[in-house]
Length: 421
Image 1 (cartoon, helix red, strand yellow):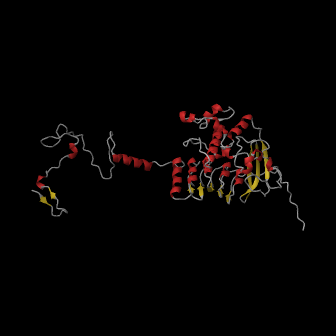
Image 2: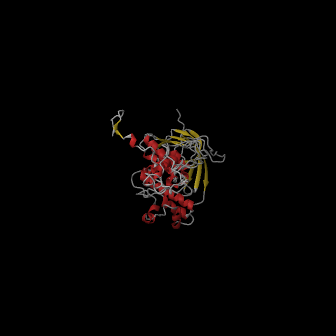
């Protein structure tokens, strides 16, 4: 007889209560011990006092799985736990990619990475150059930075750069590549001098103090009476004091290396690239321009592994610079990264010889067409000048051979005479 529940919403039929057994079935035991066919109870031979039934799972418990198989829920839970417990390390490539992605999502060009204890910056910071924001700023103050990567200076649309309160001992000459830079803060570091390429910038705000600037000595030379003019910069009307130091004459190997590293038309790439076939990299996975140890087998033994690493830095920066102009593609593999340490201050590509005697006919129209790249300077000069309304800052000039910095001593032929009324 079927009994209807008058309180049910749909008046669904219910089973007869007398047909329900008084003793509940041992469902848990039925999975562990065989049951007797007559009594539907575990057989006496299979029952052991040491055996215990499995503990019922609580709603808050995670899904358990056997050692031989893993359920779908357990995989999902383990993946979620791994993603929440494992975060990208601060300063790693993944961490920098997340920071740059946040700039893209927020439609803002400000990368704020101050007070993270960073000792170096990931090369992934160069992804900021793909942003369409009109103003891009990098705020990396209050860290432990001791060097800056070359990738930072690939962001040609960078307008604000804050490196305040770090441990930088020098500002790379690559700072001259940031032609759109308007604000620069390098205060509270260990910087002793500025590169000559900083004179190519048109800074509106420049914070330079405090730092460990070198002071001019009393016998550092006479004060220049005429303004000194260099390419891509305005005449400097402030008095300058200079200190010149000459080094040894470059060796034949250094002169040959200068020819191989200096970009040449029509491709404006270093001729060293044409000395090696890239098919070897595709077949063997190795190439002399990707590994300084492999490059040492085809270079003079006078170059150390560290110097060969600087050579590869220069070649890679030259190719990246030309690729940004859109005139040609970068011949280096997309997955290639400059082996650490990638210190832009040691990259010779950003410190070309400023002497005008290396100019060609094309340089008279556009002085940025070619660069005279050298590995070791043969002449060094310091001048104390005014940079962005900050006076008495030491500027370091480097020349590839003796006499390359003589243009700094040239005085204007035109003399100012007083006008009598």
